[in-house]
Image (cartoon, rainbow, N blue to C red; front, side, top):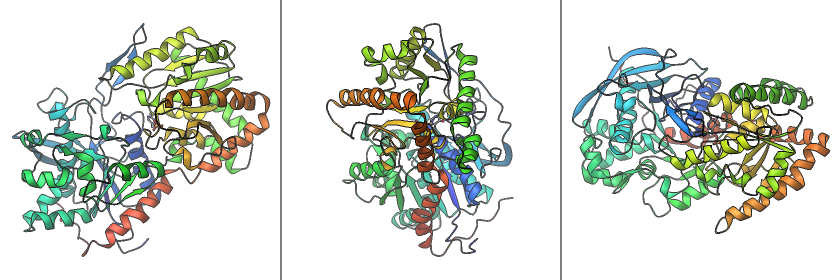
Length: 552
Ligand SMILES: *Cc1c(COP(=O)(O)O)cnc(C)c1O
């Protein structure tokens, strides 16, 4: 290990959610699972990186379907017995009221330390702040972001963590910058000088490919909540504009930024080209933690050069047993199994495969294809809930060939990305910034059948390691083109390959694993963070800041 801290700068990673295990429900989806994978990878690589987040006392929604297939939300209390009390308490003044946050720590999942802020029980005075993940708009969301950003920096100080760099994963954490600036002004720096010094120590990752997805808040509301944190209105506007746009602020307080795939980096550069004073946006493609997501039987067989079919069939049987246990549906392990599991949102188009009933329905009736779905909708997203219900209805019409697993979580994600034959991905390009479930599938020899969006254009070789749907067209008529292409590829290529060319299929499975292993894994991603962002940023931190004194 290098003694020079520039080579292994000490990083605090900020994220609203962490997906470390299905047993610890402080995550919603891909953003959190990426963050969890990063903390595990930092541990594997022995990198000095700690996580900062929120202990969501009621987690994210648990969704159960009623007898009409309509999802209902439950927020069970759980005991965070994976966490230890650090003894540290930090205070943030929110809407004029001092709020005390208890700081917990967990390393229970093979991860580097994760510090989680907690404002107390959900029915307590401040439970509305750290009760439920992504439950609030306006004031509640701002309070949560103040907890993460401002409270997070204060927690690091109180813990005595010798942080050099602050990595904001998505815009939720950018209020941390107000605290980093405030600290420096207390030491006598001007706003400009404090901002510049802060910029040297901040890294920003954006995940949004469209303007509409960017979170912004009215300045008046931020001020009322106390989110200015000692800055003036003009200073806040200089950072984030008016209204205050979180990713704009992220790009302006960072020395390096990245998008999460080659394609998304290009999309983000274009999207922000007219905004002044932004950090350069690199493309660093996401990756998944192989130790978490790759089936051990597949990993061993691949490493030993053995055929992947037998371990694959074991994973498929495991999945089908779980489908049967949870839904009563009995699918056939000999028949082609196509999987689709994602957050239930319209842009992912989960029901596209049903949009040509003349083709799909005979295939389902004859069990030429079987479909297994999972997904949950945001509690307030009726469009997403309608998608869940539409899929559930198909599972009632075709019980022998369609199943829907409610309450998508990391456990279902792992089962499905190991046990399906084909992983279907039909987002509306360019809305899937990266997508990581396809990487999990690829690592397990589950063949991707995907639109050219996110990570997939970087590795697809059509008919060799998976298949592409259409040619990457964007614009009017996209749904129709994608639909035609999906069925053409499915009927002319995927189905015949599965039933008529078993040895070719097995070869494709190997190609799929080979194309993904070491490339779309989180160790490669974190090494790129280190080489392309952390080290260059740390190299200009002069002099390197000494660890803050430990508070008693
Ligand atoms: C991997 C994973 C995701 C993210 O997958 P996408 O392909 O980006 O949608 C979301 N939720 C769960 C439970 C996962 O395991």
